Length: 216
Ligand code: URA
Image (cartoon, rainbow, N blue to C red; front, side, top):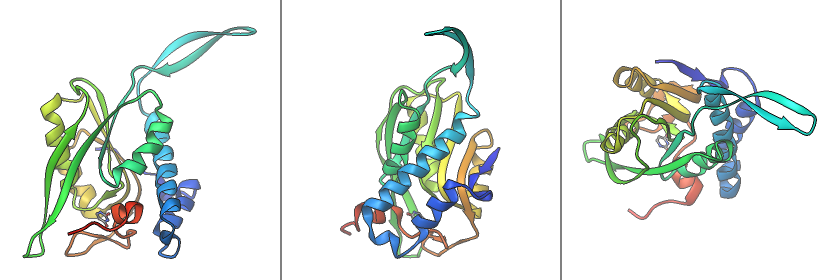
């Protein structure tokens, strides 16, 4: 499985990641969502460099230009809730994309294990499509794997791209083992996971930071 870690080299993405991880700046929820969106745009751009293109011709005011255009629109699928502001950036990049949503809920069990349940699926037909599955935090990999299983109910994508902002080493190797044909695009890979499956150092709970804490 090809793994692209964009934050390996300093860029605007590493600047945005620094702001997203910063506990002080996280108090500004609007800025957090805005930065997730900007990071989503940059990762989507990177994915665009590995999509299929067609040669075409357009007429400019001065003549004919040979151009490369995307061969087909991808399907962007957000894993709720934190996937949404991140996906909005990808939607700005792929403004012609089809869009879907899947809800993968973490239920924390008493024995400190984390279980993920998929209980909402609203996606276009996926058979033979190029699908980008979007979740800013790739912790254990369970949400991605279960979401992908749920997507298969709507058809088998021709190619799966996974877009995450921060992944754990464990999450990357889990997804690599289970989805060897997928392409993974991440901003950074962090070393550790807590017992409650939070990425360390990570940035905290991306959904809570973007939208506020949930009622439990
Ligand atoms: N989801 C989050 O929002 N943060 C983590 O660290 C792991 C999963």
